[in-house]
Length: 228
Length: 228
DNA sequence: ACCTGAACACCGTTCAAGT
DNA sequence: ACCTGAACACCGTTCAAGT
Image (tube, rainbow over all chains, first blue to last red; front, side):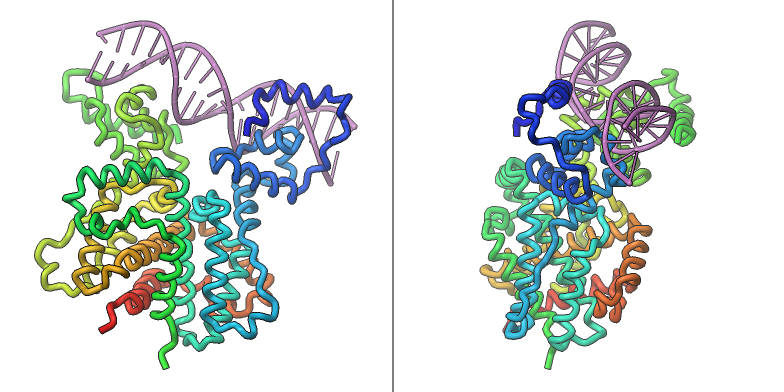
């Protein structure tokens, strides 16, 4: 956290590092850049990723990154997709019912993003990387195999997508700003006569996010399930 | 760019020319600041809002804003909530069924945000403003009145919220970056053997977003509807 | 109470140049 | 092919000061 302070000082100590010289940094590469970007984002949030800081952590000059990457946007794209990898369960999938399959993948999706909360706030502005496409393909295949009519398939996929994205974005934002949540609760308490129903149901105090995600997902799947 | 700016300047100076003071804009106020911030965001997107530019458009020094507002974050908060106002239909509500009520409010919510696409990318990091709370209260009241059990109420509200947020965030991001969408489609075409189901259902080519939103919402409401 | 300019400590990126 | 420093055109915000 308090790793690097003065840029000039750390740069100098790198240049004159003769005694403990052993670790000269490996050459730059897309992989190293993306991995370090993710580290930085995990540690300092979305505003903590800076081209200059990234280069610093990689032991290179700030401009060296631009040989590997077009611009900062690209770094964001790559960091986001790198976090969304999904390893399908190989053969257990056979024995799994379609609902179990879908629920598992979507829960994993959400959990993966919540492990890197910045990823949720990045989603709104990014395109579909290969890992997202892979998940959509799996979703599509599973629902289709479950008997969802072709006419309903895209709607079903987007509905589940929307649900996951919305849930993750919301959860991550509350996670990031406890004080905002507290402020909202306080404001709510102060003017609770305006929001009696919310107040009564304790909507903002309920913190069983995982359970709510699961239950709501079940409702949605109930609605989407093919009718026989 | 500089041309556009000077254009706005001259328009304002025309308007205030009638007053005796030669170059004084109306006094700063939170309302003016927020309204101008929304204009800027509409015109130039999220990166187009700059404290300096905002002050410039208001005809004031950059630092004058800080007397009215803590920091840039606050400007974002206020701009977001200002866009989410909802006027309940006064008495027609009586005759409306609960589904109609919910659908109307959520469609209006989505439409309002899509009129200001930056609002979607702002949502992940912001807290609940009064206008959002008002919508949640309405949702809560309507669902409760429709017979949704207290135990399911919060889950139902969050599910609908998630759905709207996810749909809006997604729609706005595709809206903002047509070339990204095109790139994704191209990449998809190139490696379509990896995503056969998506390819077949033309998931990424379907552009009836409004229809898909409505249909998926119906599925979700089917799942949420109280079972008699 | 309300507004201001100068200054500080940063940004992302272009460019010409080095190996 | 890969990396670099200097430079440019910006940022948000602190501060001491003006009315």
